Amino acid sequence: MAASDFSQEAETKGFKWFLGIVGAITVIIVIALGGYWSIEPTSFDVIEEAKIRQQEDHIDDLPIGYVYANTLAHIAETLLYKPGGYITNDVGVPGVYLDNITSWEYGVLVMLRDATSALRNHLARSQSQSAEDPDLANAEPYFYYEHNSWALPSSESEYQKGIDSLHKYMVRLADPSHKNPGHFYSRADNLWQYIEIIIKRLGGLSTQLSASTDRYEAYDIKLEKSAAISQTSWLMLDNVFWQARGSCWALLHILKAIKHDFRLILEDKRAMDTVNIMIHEMENALAPITSPVILNGNGYGIFANYSLAMASYVSRANAAALDLRDVMNRG
Image (tube, rainbow, N blue to C red; front, side, top):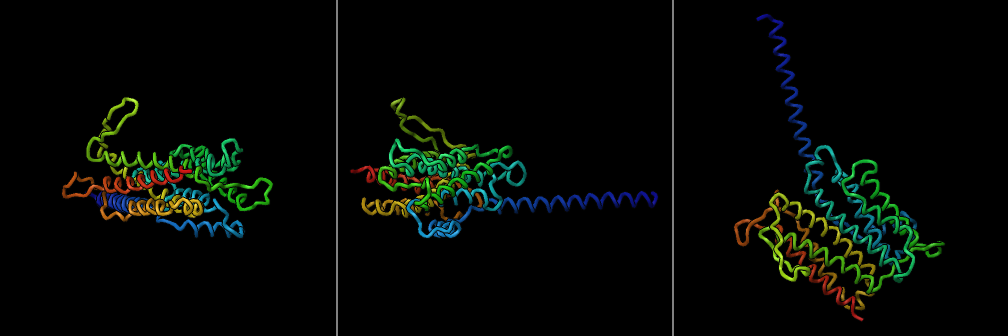
């Protein structure tokens, strides 16, 4: 064999080795980046975040409702600007295969939408026939934009518009001299209406989580009998778990904001302990996960069942929410 043939064969082998090394490095980088992007954001102090925004807006005092509105804005900002940004609408690697964090994002988004709707329709209106706040009327539809749109317009761009509208409302809320000041009514009836929504969300999450091991019996009012809810597919177990985890993360901060802005009415109704119970259960639900995968053991087997553990915390929070609703609804 000629020397040129040996040289050409060596070059070919060297090029294949180079491609193999580059491919292996790329795979390692993608996996490592995917792991980093999948890390849940940590909890934040709703009061401190409101004070930071207060300084940026050059506001002297924190008016009632400012912490609540800023908490919603900061929850949305966390969705957009956490490591990896908003991942649900990604069409490339590693985001396209990160189903756990995308489920977490959807859980956060559902709670954010509910809380923003409550602010627009109840908390910022003195009565049913009052004019709605113009900035909140803009903010709510932006957060209801489809959650997986990647272009023209992207989900991120629409959610950012919602954040900007919330910030405009907060500026008017803190400026009574504004020609069209913002309002926030921390009344028992307003909170009661929002708690009704929370109860339904937590009840739905509890049912989905409880269906992780077997078929689940629930009463169907239309059929006037118990109807079986199918067992959650093992392929969807982690998605349901992470959606619930995201919902609990968002609700934890919203409840802390409610505790601050509805402090007077909660103390008057002797309901502060009930809110604290809900907060405590949400914190328990967000305890660190020690397993690299979501375990789904059966009953009293040797493996834990993360879905049932989460369902336990969610159910207790839901029971406290029912108590809070009843207290708020008393005359």
